[in-house]
Amino acid sequence: MNREELARLATPEQVAAGVEQYRDRIPQLHGSHEHDAGSVREVTYKGHEIRIVTHYEITLDGRPITGHMLVSNGGTVHYHAIPNQEFASAVDVVKRIVDLSPPGPHTPKPNGDHGGHTHGEEGH
Image 1 (cartoon, one colour):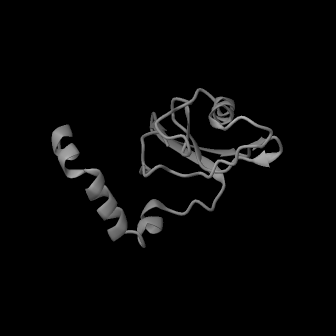
Image 2 (cartoon, helix red, strand yellow; image 1 turned 60 degrees about the vertical axis):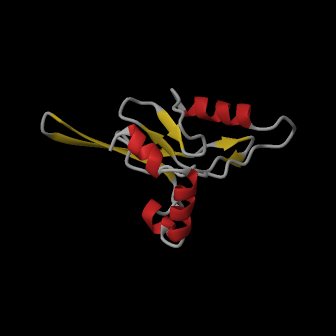
């Protein structure tokens, strides 16, 4: 499917209709996010299966940052609550959370929203 076909078939109205139609199935299709903020990377190298599990436990001002942080095979970090961006490190992700939060004495509470994306990107 080329870009023009996709644009024609994925109008906001059609996407909204699909979300409404499959509302009850979305949690099963997307998977549960009630688990830890872990990332699994797997690669085969010279006939050897390499599996790396990365687990993040991150707090900001003593409060937990929730949601998925995934590390690519290249080492960049992706945080679901900030879609379409990747970071050089988990520290850079938290700095961006601070940057995106309204000014004030409160601590941001990222909700782990996934912005309608899908899983399965290479390296995650």
